[in-house]
Length: 342
Ligand code: UFG
Image (spheres, rainbow, N blue to C red):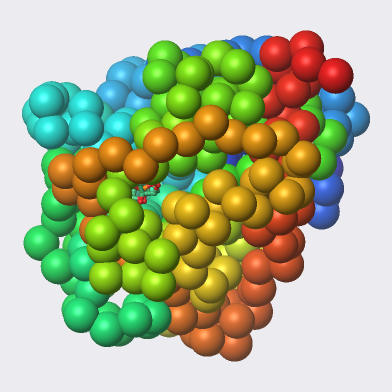
C-alpha cells in the first residue's frame, strides 16, 4: 500500500486529473466529493486510466459528523489536497453567503480534522485571482495582493490568510497553497476532462462546445484592451501539468523537512496568450473553424495576467511542459468523446 492521501473534490475537473497522477506514482487515494458539480462516473474513468479504483465517499465537508466518521474509517492519511469548493465567479456575486460558507467553513473543518486526526500536510487550491489586475507583469509570488474582484476570489484570499495564521500556531502543520492560473485541456485518454453544467463561463469549454455545434457562436469579450491584439491575456495551464504540480507539492511536504511550513507558488506556464490567440491556435491545432464574434467587454474581467514561474521552477521544482496547441487539442478530443463526434 502506498502512502494515503485524501483528495477533496476528487471527482471534479482538476481533482480527477490529480488523483490519476497521484496513483501513477504509488499514492493510495481516497476521495471525498459531494458531486455538486461532478458525477460519480468519474471514479470509473479514473479506474480505467490508472487500473486502480480510488476509495470514494460522497458527502459535503460542512457535515462534521460525516467527516469524523470518515477519519475514523480511513486511518493513516498523511496528506490532504483540498480542491472541494464553489468556483463560479458570477454566481458568487449573486450568492456571496453560500460561497463564504461553503468555501471557508469547509476549509476550517478540514483544518480541525488535521488537528484531531493528526494529518500534518495540506495542499490548498488557490488562484491567481488573489492578484487582481497587477501593476506589473509577470506576477511573482511577492506581487502584492489586491482587493478581490468577487466573493469567490475573496474566499481564496481569505483562505490563504487563514492557512498562514493556523500554521503559525500548529507546529506540526505544513501547507502549500498553489495559485492556479487558467487550467484548460483534458487527460490524453479523453476519459476525464472539464464538464461544465449549463452554459460554460470559461473560454475553452465555450470554444469546444461551439466547435461541437452545441453553441452557435463564441463571443470574444472585448478587443479594445491595451494588449497587442486588443483581447485579454491569460496564462493557460494544461490540467495534467497542473495535476503534477500537486504531486510535487505533496512530495515536498512529506519529504522536505527543511521547507517553510507555509508556502505558496504560482502554477502557470509563464506565457500570456490572448483570447484571439487561443481561438487561432485552436483552429490550427484541430482544423475546425470557429464561429466567433467580437462583443463588448465582460464586466469584472481583468486586462492581462500571467505568471512569473521562477519560484515554482526552482524552489518547488515543477515546470509546465505541454504546449497551448497540444492542450487545446486535448480539450477538443475530450469534447468529441463525450459528444460522440468522430
Ligand atoms: N472569454 C471570452 N468569451 C467567453 C469566455 C471567456 O472572450 O465566452 C474571455 C474572457 O473575457 C477572458 C478569457 O476569455 O478574457 C478567459 O476567461 P475565463 O472565464 O476562461 O477565465 P477567467 O480568467 O475569467 O477566470 C479564471 C477562472 C476563475 C478565476 C480567474 C482568476 O475561471 O475561477 O481565472 O483570474 F477566478
